[in-house]
Amino acid sequence: MLGGLVITLKHLIRFKPITVQYPEEVKELPERYRGLHVMPADDEGEIRCVACKLCEVACPTQAISIVAEPADDYGIERRPKVFNIDFMRCVFCGFCEEACPVDALRMGMKYELSSYNRAGLIHTKEVFFDPNVKSNAPRNNANFLYEMGKGDILDNIEEIDKVKKLTGIYTES
Image: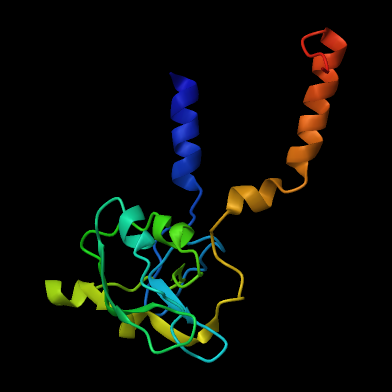
């Protein structure tokens, strides 16, 4: 009982500020932070989205709504006429980013989402589109586990096979 009290007193005496005075001080975010969505530009500075609606299907909260229209571009059938994300529903899971086959949706680093009314929390493609972000820029969080283990996976498989051969569990046919 006395040991617990000593630990509590040590934490009480040690002063480390926890509160950040937000507008004046900005806390540095981790590199894999999932903030507000961004639509990067293609090489011509246009929206990359082809209105395939895979992000809409992947969203677990149905926060994304897309209405497609025929595209004028060569090689692309559709473009999004309407692309909305309802941030009253969005849980920032990143499934939409991973589902996108053309890398048209990214999780950005912005986190200021406050609004005075509920309509301000429904963002359109005009809000997401950022011509300064190029599609070949590195992603914040997508495929992190894959990238983290790249190269090690094959080494581990070879090690597992060696162990199986030595123990007699695995035999080559």
